[in-house]
Image 1: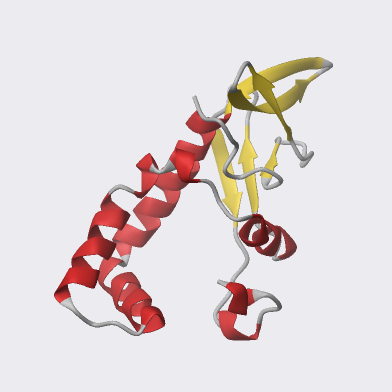
Image 2: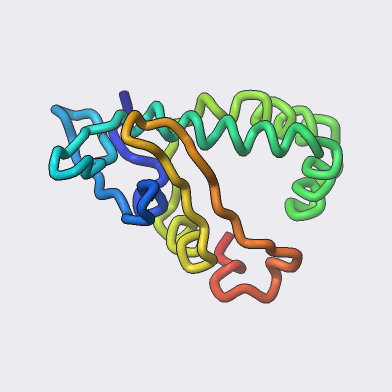
Length: 142
């Protein structure tokens, strides 16, 4: 269980309705309206599925991704490269790290959506086709 919902505002049901965030005790949940019955789906479990999806995509192009991150950081040393490789290998374990609200808002404004079913299973991730992030409003904040 997690204390926050990493992808708050980006999670939708199969009917394209946004899910709100609620809590069961201290644990964050995505609230899924199932024909009037409000299901409390564990946010950490859903967030892990999304992070695993991203991890798989990054691993498909690991060398290109690491090279790009090193260029963005302005570094090209073995220690930074090793740290990035470690972060990629364990990115699906970082559910409690959260995401800055600005990053969520940028993703939302670009049309990014995570679709889940009533059981909290990842159905689809809709991602915009972005080839040049430099010209995006707010992208310089990241």
